[in-house]
Length: 333
Ligand code: ATP
Ligand code: MG
Image (cartoon, rainbow, N blue to C red; front, side):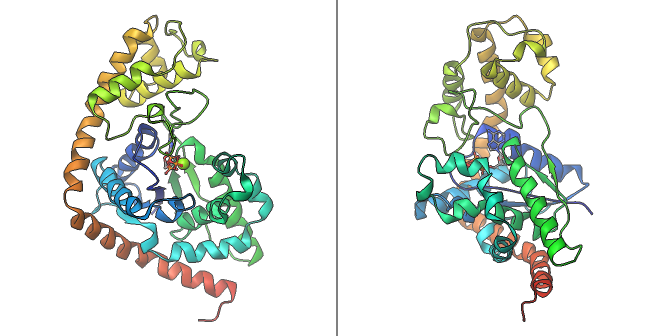
C-alpha cells in the first residue's frame, strides 16, 4: 500500500500557509483511503534554530491540537512527535555520511534561514535536509505532501536514497514522490509578495495564524499589501502582480475553486470589495478549527497520550527498517 509521510515543525503557531499547503491536504489524503498516512511534529527540526524549552513543549502540544482540529484523526493516521521515535535521528546519522557537503551548500532554505551570518548557524540547520530524508525514508514512504518551498529538500531525499542504494549495491530505499498540489502550495507573506508566509517570520502582520480571531483576520487582510488596480478577469492578468495573485490563490483554495473560476466571479472588483469577501470565507473556515484547537488544549494529558501511542505505532515500522539499514551498512548488532 502506498504510504504518506509528512511533518510540521513546532517552531511557532500554525499559519494559513501551513493549513492550506499542508494540514488540509494531510486530512484529505487520510480520508481518500488510498494511503497509509503518517504525520509528525518534527521537534528535532525545530531546535535547529533556538527554541525556548517551555515554549517548545507548549508549541508541540498546540501543533498536535492543530493537526487534529484540521481533520487528522489519530486513529486513522499515525500522529506523533519526532523525538519519541529515535530511529529518525539514527538514520539521519547514516545519511550524514551519504550526503555530500556540496549538496547541502545548494539548499536555499539554509541560505534563507542562516541569513548573512552563516558561520554562526547551527550545524543542525545545515544538516536539516539529511534528517528530513531520514524522516521520510525510515518509513519507506512513497508520497510526501508538502508546500512548494520543500521541493528542493525532496529532490535531495531522492539523491540520498539513490546514492545509498548505489554505494551499498542494494535496492532498499524507494524514490519518494513529492505531492505539491492545489491552489495554495505557496502562500505568500501579506506584507511582501516575494516572501513565503512563515510561522517564524518576526512580523505577525505577515501571516494569518490559525488561532487569530475574526477581527484579527479581517484587519490583517485589510492591511495586506496590494497594488492599486482592480482584479483581472483572466489568469494572465495576475502576471507581475504577486500580491494580487496570492490573495486570489488563497480564495481559490478556501472555496475549492480554480483560479480561473475565482477570476470569472471577482474580475473587475477593487481590493476594497474583494478583501472583505476573502475575510468572510477565511473566518468561516478557520474559526471552527481554532475553537477545536482551544478545546483540545484544555486536556494536555490526553494530547501527550495520543503522541505516545502514535510513537509506539510508528516504531513498529521504524525499528525493522533501521535494523536492516544497520545490517546493510555493516554495523555489528
Ligand atoms: P518555519 O518558518 O519555522 O520554517 P513554516 O511556516 O515554514 O515554519 P514548516 O514547519 O517549515 O512551516 O513547514 C510545514 C509544512 O507547511 C511544509 O509542508 C511546508 O511546505 C508547508 N508550508 C510552510 N509555509 C507554507 C506556505 N507559505 N505556503 C504553503 N505551504 C507552506
Ligand atoms: Mg519552513
